[in-house]
Length: 257
Image 1 (tube, helix red, strand yellow):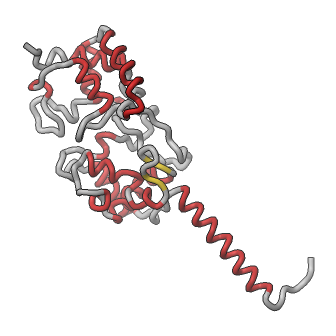
Image 2 (cartoon, rainbow, N blue to C red; image 1 turned 90 degrees about the horizontal axis):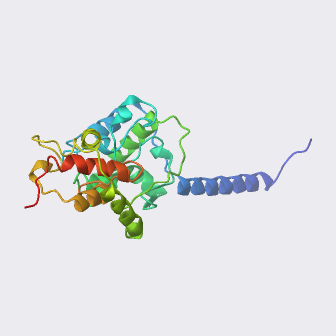
Image 3 (cartoon, rainbow, N blue to C red; image 1 turned 60 degrees about the vertical axis):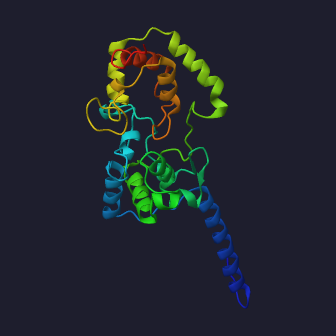
């Protein structure tokens, strides 16, 4: 194919190409957060934040609730964490049920600011819960531990929202009518609860030996959380699991008179 483009044609094509590429870039930005250039120092900073139990006033870390590994593949997954794994979090298009999308994902560490504010007690808003550099560091760490083929949209279940009240009631009734196994419940407590409710040691949550046992209240809290306590979705703690936990907890908690 021969021919020469002259006159105003070339500038016009350049302008059109810039317009198209700019539009595509804006669309892509709306779809997923941009990730800072991956550097070793940024990844290390992000890892330190992820594991730091002194990052906020409450002695909990991101790693207490979220895995940075494939939970269904390695032995470390024996611990039951209430939140989902952070693999691929840097490339998701939404977080916390759509509360964070687009540029907010980049600014607030793929939704991590919500956890830092609510569960670690750091800051008074998302803006001061995580600085921009801290968000960038977390995103870099999420990217470093990911394989790159994780889905951009992650579905999750919960029983802590008003719209889930019927499902919560059904789960509670099922757990309360089951006869739990206290031995298995003790193992579940070690895997899911002890890091925050350590008996006799300073922890994020209270020593449950000092609390009154009420089966329905305890079961509800396991699935809905309260205040700084996170919630476990039913795919992490099933009604059968909660029944076993109740069987164990009634052996260590105070009995109502």
